[in-house]
Image (cartoon, rainbow, N blue to C red; front, top):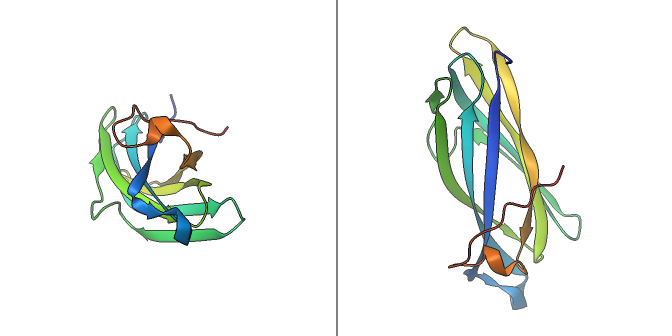
Length: 136
């Protein structure tokens, strides 16, 4: 097992109540679960997201922590949070990375796999079961 390793799972949901399709505004929420699958405790320091809509518009977001937190995760521990994004089209993608510093001082990035935001996904609407479509 690699010494420095994290897994990331993302569940996106379309938010019709925060969308205005006539104005090209589509709101999405997503819940991320980050799990330390390595051998060493590490702290999440920052995030880097790349959000793309169906027309090729891309936005990059960089910042410290996630939702105001910089969790320290020991091997086997997870941290879960929810956030959101808005697109100009009913579909798009998100992917990115988290930057960590391990308790032994090692610095490393963990990829956030690409996932689909889809306003047409009925399962992703409020009250549905959600969708975890991940592009490989």
